[in-house]
Amino acid sequence: MGQASRSQNAVCGTELLISTLDGSWDLVGTLLHQAAIIIFDNQSTVAIQIGTDASTIWRTFPAGEALVLDLRDKKAEASNFGFAQGTSFFAKGSAGANQFSISYIYASEV
Image (cartoon, rainbow, N blue to C red; front, side, top):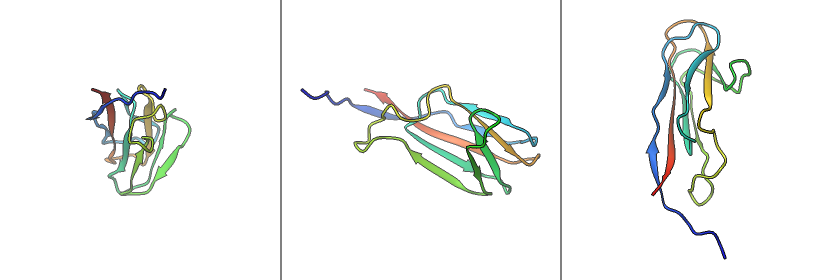
């Protein structure tokens, strides 16, 4: 017999935001829940590097670029694939008022 389906609600996680960079790796924030959909948004006028370990570049975001990752499976359910609760993100870019945000939605079972 197949696994019973479960109902889930989408819940908005607290936005992770950094407004000032110092030229080295700076903590943007830490996920409080496993992300089902995550949005990376470079709101500055310079390129910003992003990583999860404060030393390895995962991706360099050109000025003004945003990226949306939908980590759900084809049935729109949050799967076990994604950025886990407790994942920290770090940013590196030119020193100054350079803003980068990470917004996410997570699934909460009903």
